[in-house]
Image 1 (spheres, rainbow, N blue to C red):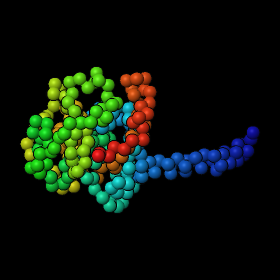
Image 2 (cartoon, helix red, strand yellow; image 1 turned 45 degrees about the horizontal axis):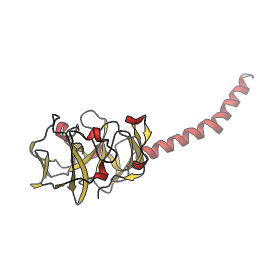
Image 3 (tube, rainbow, N blue to C red; image 1 turned 120 degrees about the vertical axis):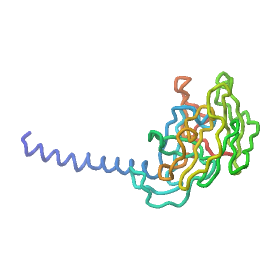
Image 4 (spheres, rainbow, N blue to C red; image 1 turned 90 degrees about the vertical axis):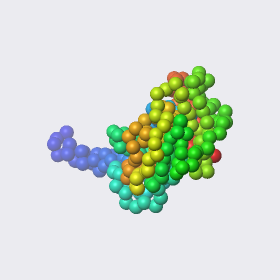
Length: 235
């Protein structure tokens, strides 16, 4: 094949094969960046609501529309609400995290012996339904306490480990305007706003709404079908 034929073939390959694939990839990645995404969960900081191996669906249009591949907001139509499971970039190291929204701008947040106090009102806790713990083996529940926590009229599961060193008390703090206080549902094993402070609004990516797929890393990464396509919304 001479040089001219080679160049002709290369141009044809670019037009018919490579360029369409690149355009499709750009469209797909733009959608994932701005509209919807999924997030793998490697740690247990949101147990028992979210388990290690869960793949979480993230609604990036829950609060705003962003420029693809950036955190620049084109337009905002809502803000995180108390109890939302938010996905955001950590102010500590820039990593993408999943935590529950506890404090809104202007709120006063306090922790007394692992009980949340929001704007002077202690949060209510009730016994947890056994159904919410079905995917946690009995051996992994040993030494842990589980309860149902009520936030903004909805309930969700929380857990604690009395034997683990953790910040179970802090004096009242006021959440700055435009920022949010985030905590993991696994209260004694979560690196969250108790350590690195509040999260700025522009660092929030979206709201986690469902478990799309769950893989059990303790059982050869076999699927936990009962968790797949389940909502993360509280009762």
